[in-house]
Length: 168
Image (cartoon, rainbow, N blue to C red; front, side, top):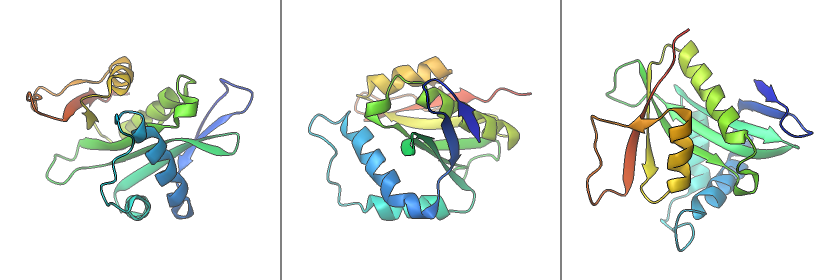
């Protein structure tokens, strides 16, 4: 658990509880809607069920940042199938749009990196929506770079980024 004090209330970063899947899905929806021109696409997915699965999945982690008793950010990661043991994939990373630029994303990212370091992870990968320049800027400030093993093609909707987890 990490606590910071960038506002009057502390920021607590902890593991998401199974009963919080609905709250996680709602935050996910609010955040993703910001980078789709027509709002969050109705892809027919049951995101609450998907989040319940992610929270319960062995070998995966879902963290949340809580401030003022309200979930303000979420991060979901796991070791991808077929990848070496020192690799983790950041599958979802969202901060409530009402809380952007308040340090929550940086604190949540720092917590992820610390878990990866302790778990012996040396490389993290993620895919970011090609039109989400705000997120791309955030990741660049955290040290993420374009993945040279998976360059983006002209019609790709996502960019693959890579992060080298610092050692001790």
